[in-house]
Length: 262
Image (cartoon, rainbow, N blue to C red; front, top):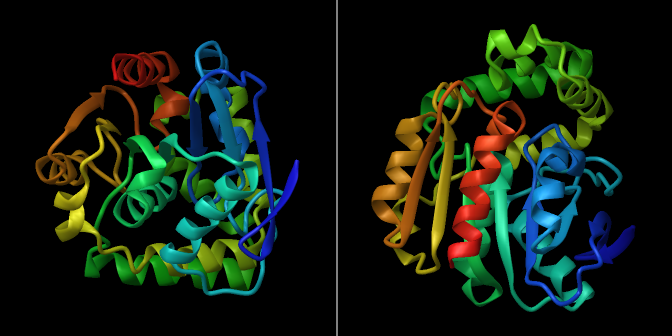
């Protein structure tokens, strides 16, 4: 459904289990809310699930950028306000995890817990040329030129050869992402700089990372774990960046175990 929040139309889905706590799911750059399909059945058995298309993605508006992480985080709060949700468990992967850090640091009263998946709290200087190259490629050649290298970063070679239905779905999501949205969000994440503030996070936090994630590696997850006092780190073997897709059973077990133990 489309909801007007924080000045734009945002696409979201909210399950009907009204008497359960809300789990909010925030996807990666270049994906959309369907990225979370492997988690839906497991989560909806116990929680009311809210998943949404980040600004510039899926069916949400893609206004001219650049965007900021502050803006993307305030989109979350605006959506919660319109839906009348006071508190939720926030689960974010990659860019979604960066947005989750903004919410935890600036709106801690809205969180029941925080789950940071295959993400980072600092964008190193050496990553800036790579981000700029991807922005330039999107503007000059369109999203098609980014699909193959992105999938190679997101999934292990053995998983890509399986011709998974989810890989096909992710490929379609990349192709459907607007260039304006991709560039706007790329500009937002390139300013990521929360590392030294992570000690302010007091909510219970789960950190999940694929063992072979090249973009937001285990070292980045460990850096967050060291600074967030009430955090647990889970490393998933045989997974790269979209660990929720590549290892859904192990991912779901870690996520549900954390949420149900709170």
